[in-house]
Length: 279
Image 1 (tube, rainbow, N blue to C red):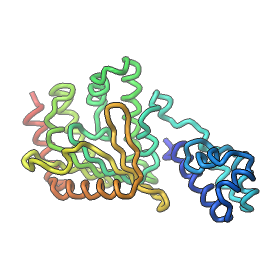
Image 2 (cartoon, rainbow, N blue to C red):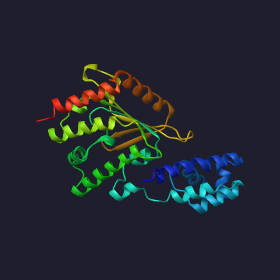
Image 3 (cartoon, rainbow, N blue to C red):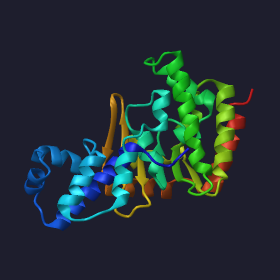
Image 4 (cartoon, one colour):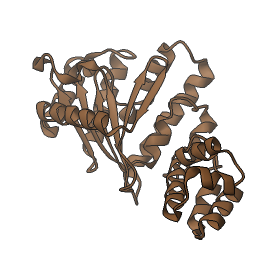
C-alpha cells in the first residue's frame, strides 16, 4: 500500500506552484491574467482547495519561465483516487493525513487508538455509531485494519507514539472476551521498535488532556507543517496554525511525562487484560 495520497499531493503541488509564482516576481493578479483565469481561481489552486491540472501546470511553468518535470508527475498523481475510497472512507480526512505522515503522536482519552484496535473492537465501535449499515461497518473495519501496514513498512515504518488514559483500558467495548484480546494485542504492538504506548493512570486525577483526544502528525518534508487533527461528532478539524499546534504539542509532552513509562504501561495493560477481562 503506497504511502501517498492525492489530497496531500494536491497541497504539496499548491505550495510549489505558489513558490514558483513568487520566485518569478509576479503578483497573483498578474499571474492570473497571464494564465487566463480569475485571481480567485488561482488563489484556490495555490491553497489546494481545488486541483491544478497538468495543462495548467505546463502553462504556469511557461509563464514563470521554469521547467520542473516533478510538478507534472505530482499533478497527474493528485488526480488518482486513494485506496480507502474503495471502502467508502471519504469523510473526515484522517486517512489522507496519516498516510503520508512520518510520525504520529496520539492522545486518547476514552478509547484504544484506532491504529491498534482489533477487528472485534473496531466493529463494536462502528456498529454502536448507528449511522452505518452492516456493509459499511465491515468496510470501515477492513480499512482500519489496512492502516496498520504502515507500522511494519519495510522502507518507511510509521513512528507512532500514543498516550492512552487508563479509563480506555477499563471501558467494556464489545464485552470481556473482546477486551481481553484487545489489551493483549495492545501489548504486542507496544513491542514494535517504532511504537511507544504509555498509559496515563487514573490516579493522576485532573490533567490537561481532559478536554478531549487529539492527534499530531509530522512529515518528512521539512516544508510540510505539523497538523493537529481533532475529531468531533459531526466531522473533524485539520489545524496547521503554529500557535494551536504548539499548544497541543506542549499538552502531549506533559501527558507523556505524567504517564507511566513504556515498560510499566505494558505491564499494566497485560495485568488488566487478566484481572478485568478474563473469565
